[in-house]
Length: 360
Image 1: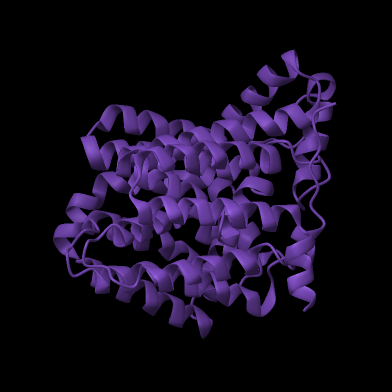
Image 2 (image 1 turned 45 degrees about the horizontal axis):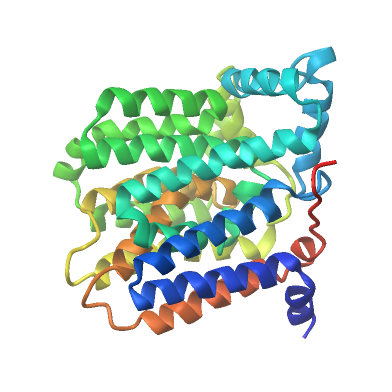
C-alpha cells in the first residue's frame, strides 16, 4: 500500500502512466496520427518532468549544479571530460541558471535518443521506444542522475545506429569520439567496428554464454586479483573510472536491488530466443552482450549497475524489434510487464519526492 501511495502521489508516476498507455494504444490501433500525437505528448511531458525538474531533484544533480554554478568564476573544479566541460562553458556564457543548464542537457539527450530510435523504427514504433526508455530504472537514472553519462550514451547510440543501418563509418566514429569526450565510458562503443569479425567468430548465444560465465566467475571472486593488479596501474583515466565503480562503498542501488539490473540484462536474450520471425538483428543482440560484459566483471560492486547502462539503448531496441514481430501474440502480457516496471520505477521513496519547477 505504501508503494501504491508513493506512485499515486508522484506526479512522475501518474503522468508517465498516462503517456505509456497512450503509446501502447497507438501501437495497437496502428494509427500514424495517434503515433505522432503520442510522440508529441511524450516530448511535452518528459520535457516538463525531466527537463524542468527542480535542481534539488536526483542524487547526483547537486554535483552538476554546484559545478555549473562555479564554472564561470573558478573553472572546471571537477575535471570532467573536455567536451562536456566545453559545453558547460558555452552554456554558462549565455545562461547562468543551473535549471537551464539541466534543461539543455536533457534536450540534447532526448534529441539524440529520438534520432536513434527513428533511424531504427521510423515514427510509429519510435514513439513507444521513447516512452519505454523511461519506464525502467536505468532510463530514469540516466536522465536524472547520470547527466553526462546519459548524454554520452545517447550520442554514442546514434553513432552506432548510423554504422549498423547505413554503414556510415566516418560519421559514426566522429559521434562516438564526441560521446567519449562527454563521458569516457563511451569508448567501449568502438568495439562496434569489430562486430563483423566478432560475429563471424561467435554467434549471439555464445556471447550470452560468455556474459553468464563472467558473471558466475565474478560471484566467486575470481577477478579480484585482476582488479588488484589494475590498482597498481591506475594512471589511466578509464582504469580509474573502473576502479571507482568497483571499490565505491555505497550507492542508492546497493544490495539485493542490484539483481534487478542483472535480470533486466537477460530480457534481450529471451526476446532473441522467442523471435521466430528473426526480426531482431543478430548484430544488435551481439553488440548488447559484448558491451555488457564489463558490467558482469564488476557485478558485486555497489555501483556496478551504472555499467549496465552502457547497453541500455540496445536493450530497448531489442524489445521494440521483438514487439514489432507479426507473429508476436503475447503483447498484452508485455504491456502488463511494462506497466509493472513503471510502477516499480516510480513508486520508490526517492522518486516520490521528485519535484519540478518552471524556470524562474
